[in-house]
Length: 141
Image (cartoon, rainbow, N blue to C red; front, side, top):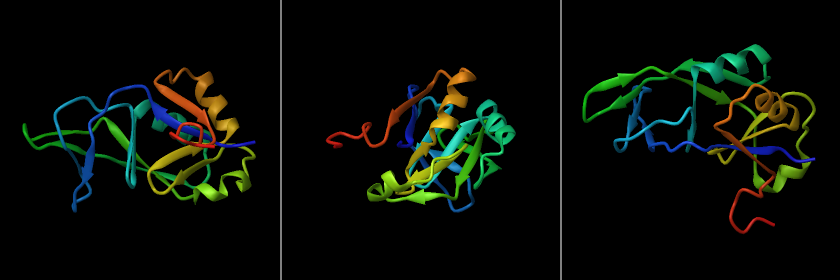
């Protein structure tokens, strides 16, 4: 059994975390409801509320502010998710996947246990995409 890589089927701008904790949009454009990048995961309020209700262990939440530097607007539509459990790609087959689990790989890619994947799919977060193990990466074995 392997964890599932979670991505979004929505387009999203890249973000840069500023020293004050806000995120700056690096270009104009939309922000996906599941927006991940190096050392950050931002999700919309509905997904954050659902994850909180499931009491997924070793994840915490904080309000997120996304700054459009061009317009000066600050968006507060997302919640930052901190995922404490991490692994290296060589450890993927050894992960304990019982119950509802979430992991980060290399501080940039987010994975869920099969149970959490099924729970998310059952609640119609249709913008989320799942690929088993490392199959979502080009050249993965």
